[in-house]
Structures are given as structure tokens and as C-alpha cells.
Image 1: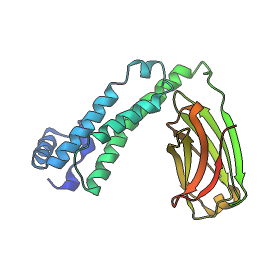
Image 2: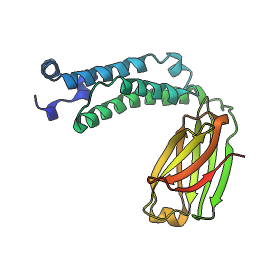
Image 3: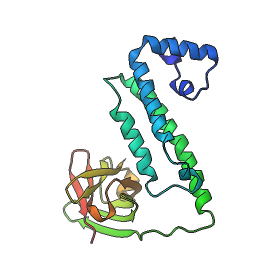
Image 4: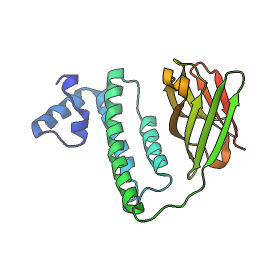
Amino acid sequence: MKDKDFDIEQYLFGQMSQEERDAAEQYLAEHPDWRAEVETLRALEDELGDIPHEFFLDGAPEDADLVLARAVRQARSERPGRVSRTMSIALGATAAAMVALIGVAVVIGYQIGTSSTELDGPAPVAISGSDPATGATLIAELTPAAGWIRLTATVTGIPAGEPCYLIVVDGEGNREIAGGWLVSETGEAEGTTLSGSALVAPDDVAEVRVENVAGQTFVAVAPA
């Protein structure tokens, strides 16, 4: 069996014929790296399987994204050795597909759980500021969740062609990238709006900043 003929996704999701599955298992027996990666993905599947049944019946809890993030981090930490870029891309796509399946169920559960009831939650926090030296302006809305935040930001005044990151800094100086983009000509003229999230507790947000990939800060704003 050639590498390009081996469909990890079909193998893991049981979508192969018996003949194809036998050939795949023979291939895995002869290729330890691939076998180890498949076991890692199975571990990820087990992690996702540990999500409580109520997660789907009652709608997604506030820390739903954290549950998925922990599962992905656990699988990554257990990945043994070095693998080829081609293998990583293929397996990464399969892992993303597995998480996406859970994500669909979460969305359905959330819609069922909230279709007739408007959820109450912490009020968003608005922040804004400009940097006279760079001419950049950041206007953002931070929505608290359980131990993390969602944010929507509009950034203006950055030249076209700049690859930028939206970064959340906590009280200890730890940085979480909440989003990234390449400034377009329209973005330079009219601004860029993007949404993201960060694993920073709402009451621990010290600063939201915009930097380019070289580390240059265009604008930084602290909550009032």
C-alpha cells in the first residue's frame, strides 16, 4: 500500500471495506511511525468520548472550548518522536475532523438548549485606544466566559501587507494569541475586524495588543 492510498480518516471512522482494512492494518504493522500516530488519534477520540452526555443534551457549557482544547493538547503531548510534514498534515486534518464532529454536536445541543430561552451572562467589556507613534487604533469588546474570554476587535491604521497578531496579555505577562491576519489594502483604508478567544481569565486581562510577526507593537490597550 502506498502512502497516498492510505486514508487515515476512513480507517479511524470505520469506512473501509474488510479488504481495505486488512491492507491498512498490514501497512501500520510495517510502519511504526504511522502506527504510533494512529494510536495518538485514538487517544484523542477517547478524550472526546469522556465529554459528559449532558454536554449534548443541555447545550454547550461555558467551558466547552476548553474541553476540546484540553483534549487536543493531551493528544499533542503524547505524540512520540518526529514525523514527516506530510504525515503531520494528514493526521492533523484527521484530528480536526474528529474535533469538528464533536463541535457539530455541541452546536446542535446548544441550539436545542437555548432555542426558547435567552441566556444571561456577564456583560461585555468595551476597550479602545490609539498609538500616536504608529497611527494604529484598536477598538475591542471582551466577553467573559468561565476562565477565558471571547473578543471582537476592529483595528485601523496599519499598513497593507503587515502580518499581524491580536494578543491578550495576563497579569503575569503571559501572552495568548487570539487571532492573526494579513492587512489588506481595504484593511489599511477601512480597518480590519476579527473575532477570537484567549485562555485568560476575564479578571486577569492586563492588556490587548496588536503586533506584527517581528514583534513590533502597533497599539496596546488596557481595560479600564
